[in-house]
Image 1 (tube, helix red, strand yellow):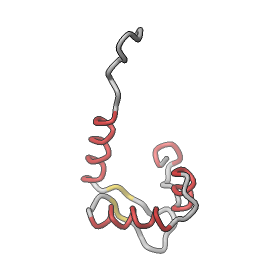
Image 2 (cartoon, rainbow, N blue to C red):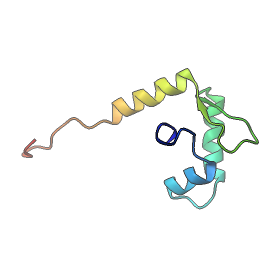
Image 3 (tube, rainbow, N blue to C red):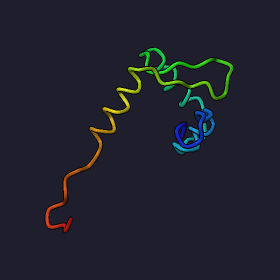
Image 4 (tube, rainbow, N blue to C red):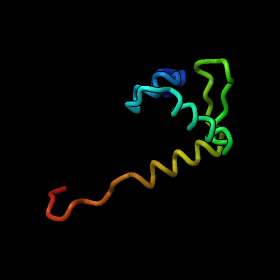
Length: 77
């Protein structure tokens, strides 16, 4: 979302995208990512998320790992 719009999503926007009603779960995940030094954020700012270098590497690795390149048996590519 940051690349498309130029700024990160709010916690409420992330909750909506994930299909959860409460923002508490999103905040828990963001706090865990901060502890792992994958992102930084200012506590009072709504759009202050910033991926760290290790967060960017982890995201890129996740995207590589989850990319499906296998063609189903019998499917025409």
